[in-house]
Length: 267
Image (tube, rainbow, N blue to C red; front, side, top):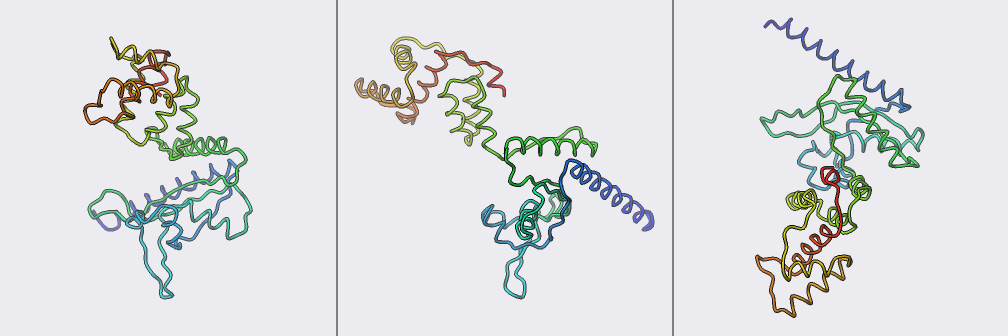
């Protein structure tokens, strides 16, 4: 392939990228977001303060002749928010499109420099409505770009809590799901038991204990279970603590005394 042909293809790709960026930014502007351009060179400390030292290995960080630690921006949100604060406020709906820089290991298919587009809805009176608006704008931008198959990742844990609170679940299961969200394997086990919607075929003394604690709150149920185990001289087996045994029995008691929609578990 000749250098002339390669240059022509590079030019076509460049024009296509610029047209796409302009289309995305145009969609944001139509929705009332003012376009801004933040400097690519940023103080490194603000990124490290917000995300921890772990992000340092993914940033291009250097010290300038004056001794200040700077970096090439690894994302757009912090630079845009800095710009907003430095300029003393102004429009609270901002959008930006531009290159960002992240270190990738040698041989990685990921780009070290790539274009990011984003919107910032600052000081919104209704945070949930603002989140929904931003999600709609993002989905619309992807659709305008011709993308049909994509994943959406959200980092706001409050949304998960709100989802759980909105489901028709026993109170104990709501708090349990929230508490164990960060334990993926156990969380999936909880969802599996929730989807089955039964406490299993329990008989004898175990079933009697489950019936006895049904309707009690977690603290009361744990006290009852601990007392029963101590009086019977039974020690937990399999490396489980008394608290773990109690929690499992409480789960079974809640499942035995309530009907949990399978659709809720699938969500």
